[in-house]
Structures are given as structure tokens and as C-alpha cells.
Length: 257
Image 1: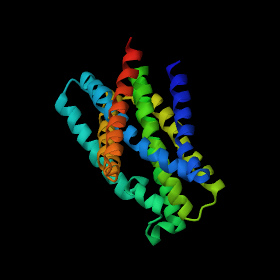
Image 2: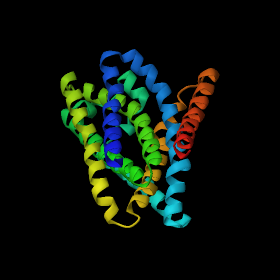
Image 3: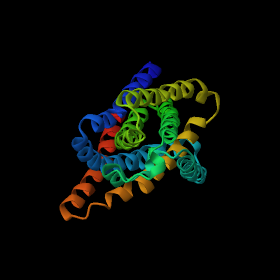
């Protein structure tokens, strides 16, 4: 039963993940507006899941704060290396996306394929992380999946923008993005069948994922929020960040009752 719920959840998250990119293709102004607010909300959900769910669960399971923090630090380093190696969207600023200030080399087809490959690997890891959460507790699986969704939406907008600049057709962009999203299903399936074979591996993976979430929220998404200088917009960003944390907290509380 848990496997069915997990696979349905991962499938829904994967399909919803590209809605931001599709919005960019057909409604660029709406995509621009949505992404600005989604980024701040996504930061809150990532921090909420990390500090309210992933780290407490890992510490309770591994019974060693030091061990968990080592794996979390390893996760930060791992995601940094992945970003450097695979050229994920995260290093493309939203300002570059909207003002089309991409360097010349980003307009070449090979970079479009590399971005797609990086996205596929990223989604595969997300699938593993979501399955690790479901293996421990349905509540943890759902909250982790929501955090994945909320940071996927603005990310996909950026990736679609890069693929458009790489001269990919709209149909090819959607097809390739769907294929990349489906690797999350593969990751979830492998996680369900193989993570239980190794003692505490799912808890270790959650600690590593916590490091990845901290890295994404702190180094990729937070800097984008500083582009807004107005007081009203800054206050709105702060409220959305706090709201993202509260949403994760409230969902966790619902499922724990």
C-alpha cells in the first residue's frame, strides 16, 4: 500500500513539476510573476522539511547528531559538485532567464542536452529521497515530496528558458522534460526495493538530502530574493518564506495526529 501511495505521489509531483516550464512557453508574463513568488515559498518549504522532518528523523534513527551532521555536510558538498559538473539550472539566475542574458555557449544544442541530462539525474535523486521518506513514514514522504515539488517549479521555468535559447522546439522541450521527470519514478522504485536491504541507508540518504536542500535553498534560491529592493516586495518575500515553513509544519502535524 505504501509503495502504491509513494509511486502515485512521485508521478503527480513529476507531472506537476513541468507546469512552470509549460507556463513559460505559453504565458511568459505569468511564469515570470509566478516564479518570483514560488522561489521564496520554495525556500521556506525546503528549510521546513530539512529542520522539522529530515534532520530530526535521521537523528532519531541513527542516534548520533555528529554522524547526521557529517552526512548532511557531505550532502552539501555532493550537490555542489553535481551542480559544478552537470551545469544544472540552479546556476542560471532568474534575471538572466527573463532578460535573456545567457552567454553564447548556452545557446548551443549540446548544452541543452546536458541540462536535460542533469535534470534527469536530479529527478532520479529526488525519487530516491522521496522513497526514503515513505519507507520511514508516509507523513515524511508527503512533506518531502511537497518540498521537492515547490523547488522544482521555479527550477523548471529556468530550464525551459535555457532549452528555448538552445533552439529546441516547444514539442521537444516538453517531451524531453517529461522524460527527465520520469527518472524520479525509477529512483523511487529502486529506493523501495534496495534501500531496505542496507541498515539505516534510508536515514543516511535523508541526512544527505537535508544537506542538498540546504545547499539549494541557501546558495541558489536565497540570492535571487535579494534582487527585490522594494520594502513591500521584501516584506512579502519574508512572509512567503515563513508561510512555506508553516505549511510543512502544519502538514506534518496533520499526519501525526
